[in-house]
Length: 188
Image (tube, rainbow, N blue to C red):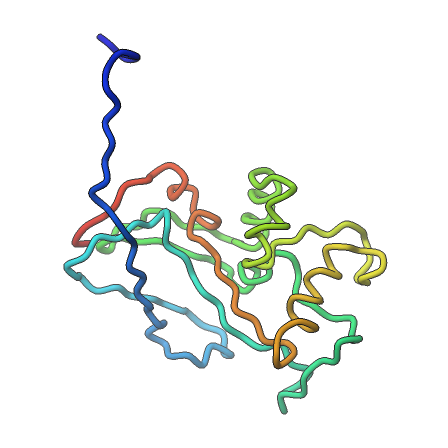
C-alpha cells in the first residue's frame, strides 16, 4: 500500500470558490435579556454548510444601568476575557435532531482550551474579535493588567458610542469536532 507516494501528482480541489454567509436569528427573538433557552434553527435548505468555518456574532452594548447610561473612557470597566462564552451554562450542536457535541460551562471550558490552543500572538491578531486578550496581572486595572486595559479600550474607549461591541466567535473555538471535521455538510 502506497501511503506516501511522493512521485504522484498532487490533487488540487478548487470546487468551492467562495463562501456565502447567511444570518440566522434566535427563534426566541432579539430580546435576550431574560434567562432561558436561546435556540437557532436552520431548517432544511438546499445549501452546503461548513461547520468548522461557521461562527456566532454577538452585538451588544455595555451600559451602567437600565436607562442606557454609557461608560466614560476613564471608567475602570470591561468584559472578562472570552466574555461571550461565560453567558451560557450549556451549548449544543445538533444535526437533524442528533446531538453532535454538548458543552457545559462553555466559558470556563473554552478559556482553558484557548489558553492551551492559541499562541501568544493570537490575542494581537484575530483574538480580540472574540474579546480574547489574556490577563497579564491579578488586578482589574489597566495600569497593572495589560489584558484588562486592551479589552477596556476595545469596549469602552474606541467604539462610537462607547460600550458598543460586535464580537465574532468561531464554532471551532467552542466545539472540538470543528477542529477535527473539515468537511461540508449538505441537506441536514
